[in-house]
Image (cartoon, each protein chain N blue to C red):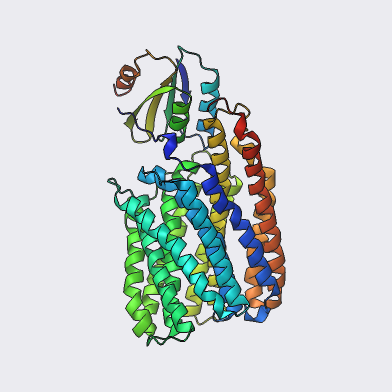
Length: 421
Length: 84
């Protein structure tokens, strides 16, 4: 028997989290524009500046914003420690991140190398601070649950990814580090994609799949070892990528297998829900995990079967996986936060969570998201279809932004009507 | 005693149903929530409403939370009973 509970003072203000989430659709619109206006033939060439710009708009602009916002919300709950002056930190981190991504993507897309310096400074300053501040809080947690360990691993990987981003930028600016720029880029990508993004998705999934959908928990071995195993693979991968790239494939295969197992278990858990009501967020998780399984399959088809389009398909599907999870999570987090903060203020007119972003508004988003996935996969095989994928992605981002803004408007309309001060 | 067994209900049903009870329970009522995980957001809101609560974990996936607006009701003894 005990009295356990966080004080409301430890929850960050809604505005601190909301600003990150509302920025996701804006970067979605920019990414769709970048995809639509670029030469379709270059969109499967990973060294092309336009492709690099698109990757950073999606993974740093959309996914990075979502993940930093989610960490702001989850850290006090999971670590039991409040972030001091959360609104102040959220404001400057958000502003620097946003500006940094715009400059980096703009510098790449329009080939203006002069934008790389300030972009790097802004992103290092904001994301570097996030890494240090949050790691400092998480390392002090006494009871390190699998989710806490996952977040520690993810933030460490983000720090490593940032260090290699500096190295990559230096080499592209003509500084000779004695290492092939493409190999450095591979290491940077590995830490960012698998160490930061995938491990954070795992850490969040361990926490929320069971909580939101009332499923059995993930197996203990998966929860305890997968994040650390991924980190170990990535660290071992560094010397191989830099000095023996031909050998790195074995570790990549191991990584791919772990991702496939994670996807399989998540799909199985979603089938084991106690009350199987398949709302849009469940479908988005399923879509993401099915796409992850396909991405792994295509990666193997290229690496073992020599099927040329395999890598590009896997890469686009990977981005699609991450966005599926971001959409699923934000459609749970934002209505919950609106409901929670209005109730905490004693607003008697607080709507039901299901009415804050209605299912009839989410469902067309799901259909558009499926259409985007099909269009992207088809475009890898038939590049002119990238234009169609861009149009669909633009529409998807618009609808997503409209849905999030609708939730925010409900909050701002009602927030001063509370009976509690 | 107002009873709500929310075990196995999908998010956000347990929170929303409990909030409804908060709104109409009166000074002497005791609200007993049985749930499959610790409802931290609900406890934070209860605190804001000046509602006292006591939490106990009876086993894997079974939490009991007793809420009251009364300053005198002995919630701790109710919690003891949930282990019996």
